[in-house]
Length: 256
Ligand code: CIR
Image (cartoon, rainbow, N blue to C red; front, side, top):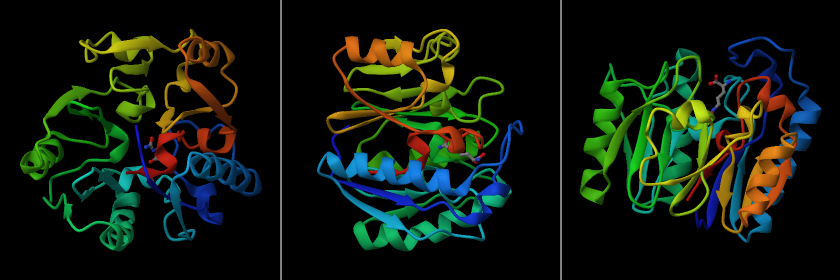
């Protein structure tokens, strides 16, 4: 949870065509821009260098850069998104990673699918949730690509009806995760300390611990208070527009 860099991408006008499980309204581009600027500023406030890429009109979901790559200390892995409309986003990200990293590898199997939103990297392991977007072949390929860097990959399950594994959890520090009760019930966080989202605030689970801050979506006061009571410094960021497209705090950046 200590980072010196982040990469994000501005939302484009095509965001109105972004993928969503349920249509709860069209995202407002101006408001999305304003939330995005607050988000980038919060990352910068912790002292990190933030690269903000230009909007990509051809890919409505491209603002959710997290799904295109996994950034580790030793190098980066370019993903193969399981959503067909998002597959090309990974290739758009690759040159930016190559500019910052000496070692960039890629998931390349024709049957391998994996999105960054399903990956939670902790201090001891990499948890990957199998989901509608991430399959067993993608997880196995990732396992092979990070083995010589010393990482252990553990396959877990993203709950039915939940977009990504990290839709329902986030890492708060070396030993603590924030998670929904429905996800933690699967037993995947044995050995970790778990802070639960408050009842009815499951959408607060996707936060990020970025240096000294926990960035969380605004509008979840009971969960916010739990985090504050646990000693975290919380910054609330408006997320209403990204939420219409099932996006949250982690999706909006790559962090390393
Ligand atoms: C999608 O369905 O792919 C986008 N509308 C949302 C992606 C959110 N990404 C993430 O949780 N990492």
